[in-house]
Length: 168
Image 1: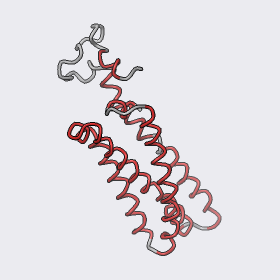
Image 2: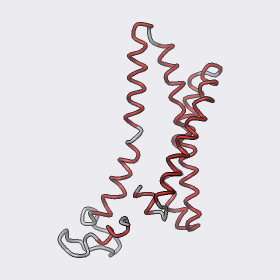
Image 3: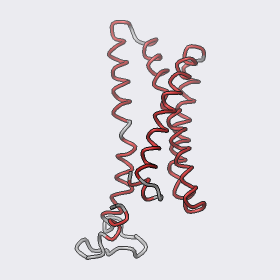
Image 4: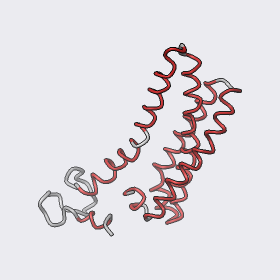
């Protein structure tokens, strides 16, 4: 949420970004399911990983796009979430891969580990976002070069000057 707000978005933009991700994930699950039976696992999984990386790069360069194009730069954030959503449909071929490579007696265990790991990793992006975006904003003395925007001492009145940027 803080990343979206720092780019000029609001709560509705944040909600739309989540909806776009899950919508394209649902759509891509069908496509990945169809192609995981027809194409080699390496091809489908490479496509999913490539989409995830491209979406992450778009997500990371959004501040540059916003600085260049203003609010329209946030379209880059939407494109990143759409492409990442498409790539996240890779859970289908990864489950199919484990199903074909493991014995029947151990299949549910390995597919369960795979799915559990995927569910645990999903919130890691926003958690890292919180660390890299919010920590410098709320603790400018931790990252000393803030362009003179905040005080360098933790007890100075200017130390939390960035906090107002994220409050309503």
